[in-house]
Image (tube, rainbow, N blue to C red; front, side, top):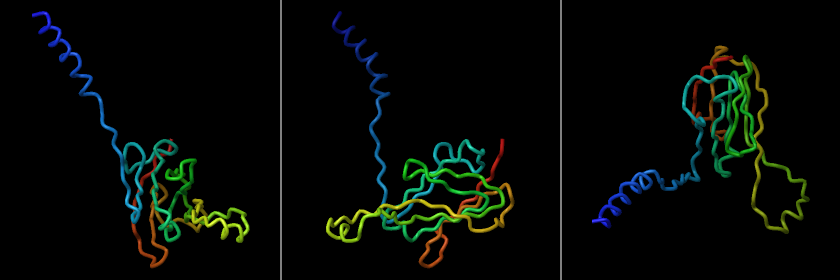
Length: 160
């Protein structure tokens, strides 16, 4: 009888622990697609300096062909290569793109090493005056080759 009670208590107390353990989940990204989404809680209203981080995941093969146009804001690279911060800059239009990093290595050494790894830097430059209302941020991802809009998002800004 004592063994039966101890077995019962063992299952009673270990069951909640088994329910709380989680499987490790992995996310697999396609190498022919890009991803742009907000980090954390998804909302169309951004609070200046609080929820302005976005994931911009682009395979190296697509980076030379992508332009990001932002009205009333600017995307800024962070230490993480797939995370960008959106800065609210009222009245300005910015263009961001990936540029091939110049490693300052002579061409002969690059050819001899056989290295095909390309490194890109995310660069944002001013591109004029914004045409959208001042409290609205418009983000467009554009294919540079045929000038088609791949993605367009509108966010509203709430300043502190």
